[in-house]
Image (cartoon, rainbow, N blue to C red):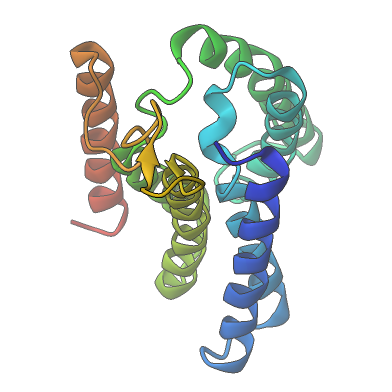
Length: 208
C-alpha cells in the first residue's frame, strides 16, 4: 500500500502539471490554476479519509474544513457579512468534527470510498460546491479533484503487486481500489444512490 507521503508527492506533482497546463494551454488566470493544483493535490489524499490511522485523517479533515467554506462562499446566502461569517464558521466546525466522526464510523478502509464511483462523486461534489458562471472553470476544478483521486487509486493498485520474486504476485489488497462494487451490497448501494443524487443535482444546476 502506498504511503501518505507517496500519495502526496504524486498528487502534488500532478497538481503542478495540471495548473501549468491551465496557464499555458487553456488561458486560465493564475488564480484558478493554483486553486486547481491545490484541489488536485487534495484529491490525491481524499480516498484515505477512510483510513484507520489518525494523523493523516485529522490533517485532511482539517484542510477540507478550511477549503469547503471558501468554495461555498458564493452559495451561502445571509443578510449581513456577520451572519455569513457565523455560517462559514459553523460549516467549518461541522466538517472538522461532526462529519469527520460520522465518516469514521460509517466507512472501512479500502471500502467503497476507494472506488471508481467514489471518484465520480468527488468530481460531482466539487462541481456543485463551486458556484461560478464559467462552466469551463467548474469542470476544470472538478477534473483536478478526480485526477488526484484517480492517481491515488492507481498508486494503491500498483503497490498491491509484489515484483521482488521471479513472478509478480498480488497481495490481499489487489483490486480493492479500482473497483465498481464492494463485498458489502449496502455500502455499494449507498454509494450509487449518492452518485445518482449528485448527478441529478448537477443536471438541475446546469439547467437540465
